[in-house]
Image (cartoon, rainbow, N blue to C red; front, side, top):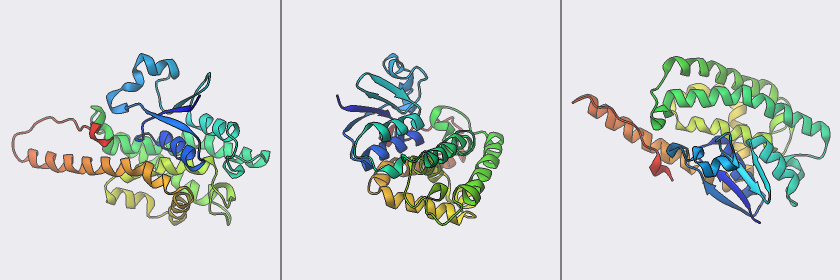
Length: 252
């Protein structure tokens, strides 16, 4: 049976899994689970992932969720995947795992919370939260500094001194790409001081194109929609005040 990938391209980990599949030529079916419509809570999807999160995969009788576990499985289970994505060398694997474990409690926590509370919350019927955004920005800025000074230490173009990308690179870069949704001023303030991080993002994009660019198109469409809604909201504020919930359903 063909590999099934359940995903929403607005989800950073979903994008990482989709790009990995495409770059490595895996035969798979992408099944959209629209988070903005809360489809992750449907009984059908919760049969696949009781945690109600994307991405998830079904490969034969295996149902698997959590993007890092999925990437590791795909790298090991499918012939033809280049060794550099998840090397056979145990010391290299261990370093990749250290980055992935760090990612969840640092970069992901800061980036996801910041973008949600600074920009995306209205799309899910939630208010923006400047206080939560400020706290998340501290974690995000600290995480970017650690990537710059530690994880990208050495002469390699990719994480942990490698000259080729691993599943850690694709996972973390997809996380940082969520910052494309921000206003240019905020994005420049966050990424501007980190030249090495910017170069690494570009190296990862080049190593995985054209799939990287194609999968990330959704971010730029959503950003355009958000900017339009912001302009409409600004115009409305000069007249009669109305409540408005931003809709992202047109992104797909």
